[in-house]
Length: 398
Image (tube, rainbow, N blue to C red; front, side, top):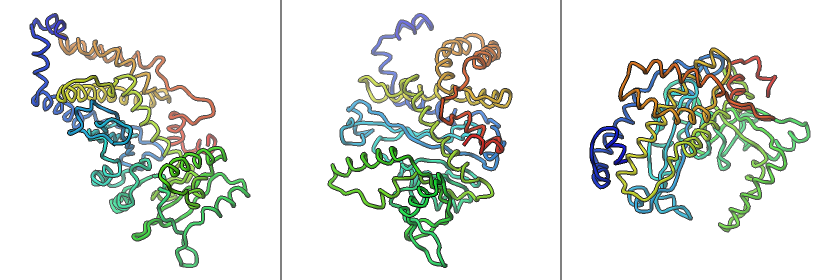
């Protein structure tokens, strides 16, 4: 680094001199750059066709955690157990329609997702659609979304009380009876109007998908192993529910049919790919021993590069989808843009007039051999998007 600074800027500085410059001011500077970029992100129009056009934002949120040097444990306590004494969690939320990043915050690893759901529920706006996994499941949050005239699609927590109305009385939903009915009739999916919550009640639609026996058996083996360690016994109710994938939503039937509810939920899986790219391509989780302020500067700098590249990819994804009807591979695009970082750096340093030409080169590169590949016997992201934007194709592909 000292050699590069001397060669590029004719500044002679020692290794110790560089290390001293990773100070509170340096952290504040890099963090401010990151936060300002997020707040002034490129406003993309998105693809407002089909079912997604009914919502302002389609909010996809998840988190990723990784260990950091144990010396950071007072500032970033780990999640305990066999993990490191120190760890970091990155909460990430983006709009599946436009690609805009709605939230990216760094917290200690011991802060659970459900706490984040409580503390950020006010971010949900009218007519938003929120899609999250069970880690964020909390009934008070779902009530808040409903009262805000927004929508949610969520998996159902196994401990949540579910009632259906029969002869003007609320009765607990019998999942064992539902299994017998679906098995006997060969039904793969059913939908019901139900009410959830033991105290405060919330009317929702429940979509129940019957899982293959091997999936059910794998789930039971896993929970039995966990419960055995804790000295617990797996309840009959858990066993009955483990036969299904169970989704709940407050979206009216006339807006979204049951088949589309489960398809929409699959968009959430894209966030796992994004985290994989962060780690495999940008190595945000790899940290050697260094002082905390230096590590924090490096993390914010890496995340800044990630979100700039994300903007470039999402802008091209929308443009190419409208033009060619095909989706870009996030993984392929990130790998290519990482290799082109030096080009952007040179343009910004020496010749900003070349920026337009450079962007045109990137556009040409991304339009060749960067398409999302279709996987056999799986509904890929491109097909999910097709189903959402081309309603008539829904029953053909599912």
